[in-house]
Length: 270
Image (cartoon, rainbow, N blue to C red; front, side, top):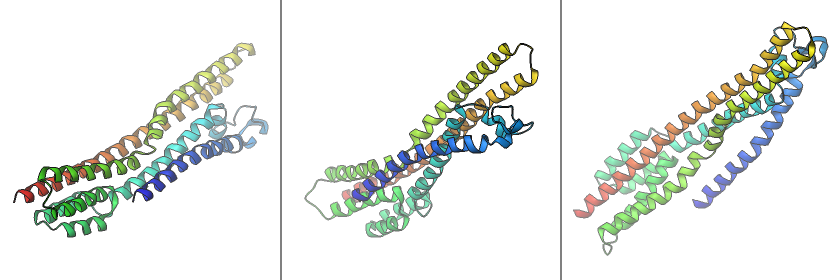
């Protein structure tokens, strides 16, 4: 089990290390060849103003910060999908509350073997932790030479060790989403400031005021803010969503663990 978990963790680490540079490269390609397509600009020249109403050209004029923000948006979506799949797998096949209720009912009749079977059918992180506790529960129930309090501690230890193996898998890559949520807006504002500096510098050297050029320059600069805030908002929503799901799984693990300890203690006294 530990070997399988270690292999899974390594694959997820490789996944993150591969996805980030690939999506940055893909964003640069999109910026240069899709947004920077000459058809999007006056005179078919990306150095000119975008065609009226051509948003691809306007986004392209946002500058070199644009592909970075596009890559961050793609990373948020990619890691969001990856987390959805991982957390869905961790939940197992059935409803967590119903599963815990079944375990409680079976433990109340000291039917440990059937409870372990339910864990095998449920699968997922909660079921893995519960199964570890139940397995130790069954082993210690057959040993009369060990004090009851010590048996409880041994069960708790097995549950805690299994939980420590499961939780990192649930929280993996969340730090990437949280980091993007923090830096996307800042990068967007940086792009906007640089764009505004460029627009007003061009206006200062042009002599006569050009309202169209100034309006285009400001519009292009604000594209960065829009991309940054949009990416940050999506990242924050996903991070909070995944955190709430992980908290629910953690609560399920704690509830099931408490039931195991409580029932073992009760049966030991009897």
